[in-house]
Image (cartoon, rainbow, N blue to C red):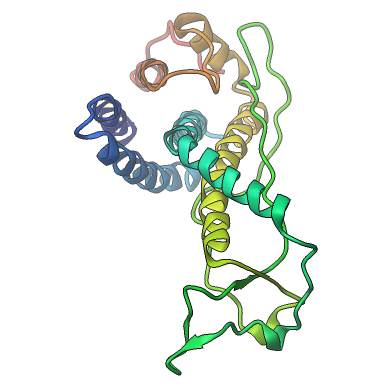
Length: 261
C-alpha cells in the first residue's frame, strides 16, 4: 500500500509540472516513468491474489492500480493530441492525393541506398506494409453507485508496439510510401497505442471487480468520492485511490466498521 501511496505523489508532481510552461514537456516523462513504477508495483499484487483476506485486499489494490494506469495512458494521449491531429492531416492528405498503389514483391522492398552503405535515401520512398490506423472510442466506468456493469478482459496492454521491421524475405507484398508518411504512421501508431491501452486496462479493472466480487467496496468509494470515470482528473484519481487505500488499511487494522466485500 505504501508504494501505491508513493505513486500518488508522483501523479501530483506531474500534474503540477504540466501546468507550468517551463516544465510541461518534463511532465510527459514524469507520467511515463510513473507508469513504469505502477506496473512494477502491480506485479507484486498479482502474484499474491487468492481467496484469502490478504488476497482480497491485493485484488482491490490491483483494481486501483489498473485505474491509475488507465488514466495515465489517457493523459499521455491527451498530451500528444495536437500531434495526433497533425499526423492525421499528413496521412489524410497523402491517401487523398496518392494514386492507387502498386504492390511490390518482398525482394523489391529493400529501398534505395546512398553511397553503398545501405542507408535509405531521404528522397526515396520507404516501403511499409499497407494498412490504416483506426480510432478508439471512449467509455465510462464499468460501474456506478447503483450497479456494476459487466466488464471485459482487454488483454495485455501498454508499451510501444513498434518493434524492429522484419526481414524483407519474411514480408508479404509491400507498398512504397514517402519517408515522412512512414514516420507519421509510426508516431500515430504510438499515440493510438496509449489510447488503446487506456481502454484495455480500464476493462481489466472492471473484470477484476466482478471476478473478485468487490462491487460493494467500490460502490462505497463511489458514494464517498464520486464515481471514477475516464473523464476524471488526476486530482480526482488521487483522492479516490487515497480513500480506497485508507479503507484497506483500516481493514488490516481490524476496524469492525469497515466492510470489505
